[in-house]
Image (cartoon, one colour):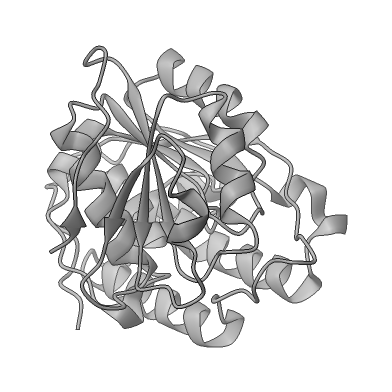
Length: 269
């Protein structure tokens, strides 16, 4: 459950809504939102019980502020914001982080890709610019890419980027229950689930930055990659280890899995 009011209205059902999950982002959130408002009219910020005055930084801006009743993690914040966006009639939901890592000026690139192929999951790919990414995060991401590519049967450029455009269809298809310890599993698992619904990824190269005044990352490379790997192992074992998916991921074959029966994302524990 979330509290708050949807103060913005959609001009047409064709519009995209931006959702930003926020937990203690007071140093960066205002600049991120101001930049985003230059490119997208409807912005929803989901506060995950911040304790540093994050929401006060946005009190005078034309955005919708939602509040989780307790600290629920990134996945639940994203999901709650997505449901609110769909209630506004969004055609697709854009997501980005509030820590300044994603450049709002690149929103048009993702929106163009989404409008060109409205049935794809558009992801801003950062790994082409490896020199600016901390080495431990780059290696963890590459490791995760291999397994998620296998399980989704497609080449994956950046499985951990939160700069995305989700088609409304995908959000409606995935009935998922969240838990706090799956906060960084959701964005990986939904790539796999999307492929099972024949919704593949489109990757758009984007810049990435790590502002000095940003709070420390909540992503723990060892712990969270182990959780992601465990989810992928469960997915693969349930499909007989999906050898055709491995072949597709290694051979740049972007054909959706055939004869697959879509199922909801696994319930969080």
